[in-house]
Image (tube, rainbow, N blue to C red; front, side, top):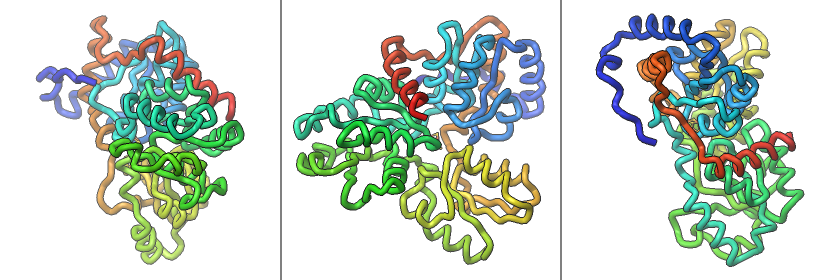
Amino acid sequence: MFQQPLPMEYTRLSPEETAERILRVRRCLGSNVMILGHHYQRDEIIRWADFRGDSLKLSQLAAQHPEAKYIVFCGVHFMAESADVLTTEEQVVILPNMSAGCSMADMANIRQVEEAWADMATATDTSRIIPITYVNSTAAIKAFVGRNGGACCTSSNAKQVIEWALERGDKLFFLPDQHLGRNTCAALGVDPADEMILWNPHEPFGGTTPEAVQSKKVILWKGHCSVHARFTGEQISEARAKYPDVQIIVHPECSLEVVQAADRYGSTEHILKVIRESPAGSVWGVGTEINMVSRLAREQPDKTIFCLDPVVCPCSTMYRVHPHYLLWVLENLEGGRVVNQVKVKPEVAAEARIALERMLAIC
Ligand code: SF4
C-alpha cells in the first residue's frame, strides 16, 4: 500500500480553498462519481459523502449503483477491497490515501494464517474447523475463508454467522478480532475460559498446544482494534459515578470485560439507532470511535452523549484521509486520470466473494 507524496500545491491549500475546489469538481463530475464516507471519518470528509455507513453497507451501496463508474471510498484499505470485490468489473474503486490501513486487519496476513492452518492440520481434521473472518480483514484472508468453507461476518451479524458455523463444524477459527469472536461466542454460551483458545501468530504453534486445538471449540486469532482496545471497565465505573442515569453502549470490538460491564453493545449502526431512538434527556456513555460519537452528540443536542475514553481516540489510519487527498483524487478524475485505484486480483476476489456471499445468504 504505497502512497505517493501529495503534490505540494495541495498541501498548501487552506481548508476554505480545499472545500471550494472539492465543491466545484464534485459538481463537474456528477453521478459518474460516488463518494462513500465511513462513520469514523472526520466531519470535513463526511460533508462530501453521498452515503455514510459502516464498511459493508457502503460496499453494498456501491454495488447497488452500477451507474457510478468511480467509487471514492473514504475509509480504509480493506473496505475499498470489499467494495472492489462486490462491484462490477466496470466500476473503479479509489482510496484517497493508500496509507489508510487498519491496524486490526494488518494483524492477520495471509502467510501467517496459512501457516496457522497447516499447524492446526497436524493436530486435527481442519475440514471440521469452520473459519470465519470479520469483514475487517484483507481480501486475501476473506479468500482463505471462502476456499475453506467459511464465511465473513460483520459486527451486526456475527451471532448468526457463528451459529451457522458451529452447526456445520466441530470448531470455529475466528479472525482477526479476538474480541468480536470472544464476545459473540460468550453470548452464545461458549465458555471463554474453558472452551476458547487464543492463537498468537508470533509464537510457535500459536502459543498453544495440539491438545488444546483438539479439545477446544473456538480458536481466536490474536488481533484487536487499537481504538476499541482503549476502553476499560474503570472508565465505565467512572461514567456511572458521574452520571447516575447513564446508559453505557459499546462496540463488540471492546474487551469482554467492557462488554459485560456495559448496558448494551452492538455495531456502529446499532449504536446510532439506539441513541437516535432514545428519549430526550437520555444520558449515553459510548465506547466507540470519537468522530462518530462527537457527530452524534451534535446531531442529538437534547441528549447527553459522550465518549467513555477521556483521551481523544480517533481511528488514526482512517484520519489519514484528509480533504487534500480527496481533492487530489477528484481533480485527477476530472483530468481523466485514475490515481489510487484499489484492485483485488481476480482469483482472490472470486474466493473472497464466496465468503461474502455466504454471509449474505446466512443473514
Ligand atoms: S476503528 Fe479499528 S477496526 Fe476500525 S478501521 Fe480503525 S483500526 Fe480498523
